[in-house]
Image (cartoon, rainbow, N blue to C red; front, side):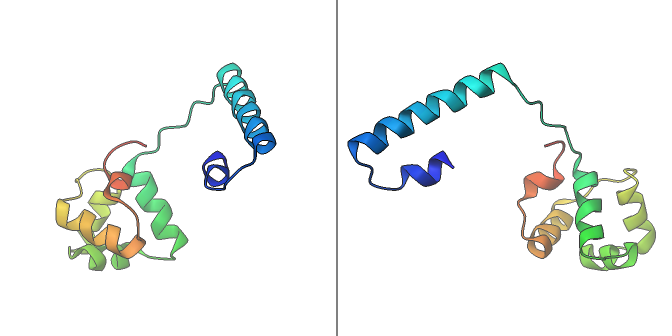
Length: 103
């Protein structure tokens, strides 16, 4: 929100209000820290597949592996390779960080 507001030309009163708002937000965040949960790359992948209604077979075809390899990847028994990650990023329009460890 602050980034969006900072794109506008503000008059003096608006600038003071914006500065005060930023100070209040920072004070609130300092007093009420939020620990974001760590989500594994595999959990993100499973969620993306579910959201798109894709099966293990669909996933395996997408990354160019046999269905059994796709199953092992989703169970965490095998790792994604760079070509797999590239295919997933292209398909789901996300960055590679999604599949590289916890977020």
